[in-house]
Image 1 (spheres, rainbow, N blue to C red):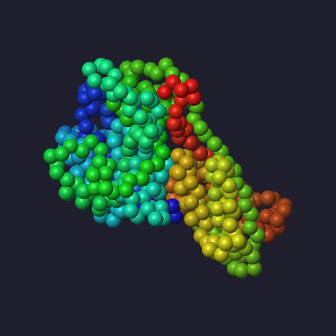
Image 2: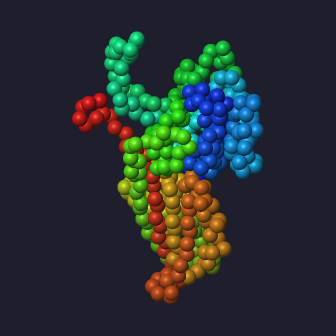
Image 3: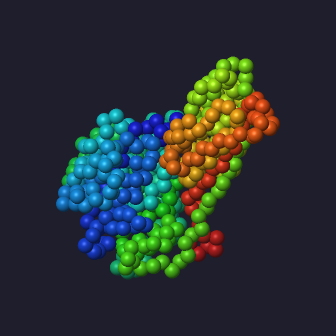
Length: 423
C-alpha cells in the first residue's frame, strides 16, 4: 500500500469566513464555480482520496444549513461532519480538531476558498509525513516559489528590495500529526492571533517539510479570482457577472507512458496475483516477486511518463529482498515518485492478455485495488482483458501478458528567475 493508503487522515475544511473582500451577499465558499459550489470541490477531493477517514466542514453557526446544501449528496457520506466555527480562523480550526477521528494519525487543514485540490497534493503531503525516517517531521505544506522581485513600500514609496531567495508562498492543505497539533492548540494563548497553523509548529521548533505547490490551489479572495482560477483550471465557465480573463489558458503539461510485462506459468499450483487481486487458478506464475504482470506493467507505464527508468532499475530481480515481494508496494512507490515530481495521475489503463483465468469476475476488485495503491479514484482506473485467439504463448496457455498506459498531469514548472533578467 502507499503511504497515502495506509494513513488515517482527518481533513478539516475551514469555511466559516465572511469573505468581505469578495463582496456580495453570498460568501465565496458557497458560490458556484465550474458547475458546483466552491466548498463542494475540496470536500469531494478529500473524499476521493484513500487516505481520508473523515472530513470535517467548519461553517459559521448561521450557515450550517447553507454548507450542507452546498455539498449536496456529499453530506450523506458517513465520513462527512459539519460543525460550527468561530469568529476567527483559529477558533474554527479548534472546532474541527475536536471532531477529528481518534484513530487518525494525521490531520489536514484546508481553506475552502481553494477549490481545485489535486489528488497528487494530498498524496505528496501524506508521503512527506510517512516516508522512512520522517518521524521527526511534525508538519508539511505545499509551497510555490516567489518569482517576482519583492519591494518594501511605505507611504506609496519604495524603501528597499527584499531578496526572494529562500522565500516561498504557502498554500493549503497543511498537514500535521494530529496529537501534536491538538497539544499545540491546547497550550496556545488563545488571545494571540494565528493566521497560519504552521506558525504553531514553527514556534514549537518542530521540523516542517515542504512539497511542490500547485498554481491551481489559487485562493479565491477578490471577484477577479474566479476568472483567474477558471483560466488555471482550463475551464471557461465562470460565475455570471464575473470579469473574463483576456489571457489565454495555459497549456497543461500532460505526459503519457506505456508498460509491458509477461510471466510464464510455473509448475506450482495457483492462485495467481493479477492487478493486486488473488485469483484462483490451477497454476502459479513463475517470477522473482509475486509475478503480478498487471501491476508490473502499470509501474513501467508510470515510470515511462516520469522518464524515471523502469521497474527493474528500481527493484532489481538480482536483489534477494524482492524475492516473492508483493507487487503492490512497487505501484505504491511509483505513485510516490509522481507526488515527489508534482505529477497527478489522471488515468491508468491496463489490458491483461490470457486465455485463463477469466478476468471479468474480478475486474471491479482489480480497479479498486489499483486505485487504492495509486492514491486515485476508481473512475480513473480501467482494467480490460483479451485473448490472443489461441495464437502465441498466451494462446497456448503458457503464460500471461499485460500492457498498460499511464497519463500524468505535471504542475507548472518552477523557475528561480527570469531569462531576460527583468525580475
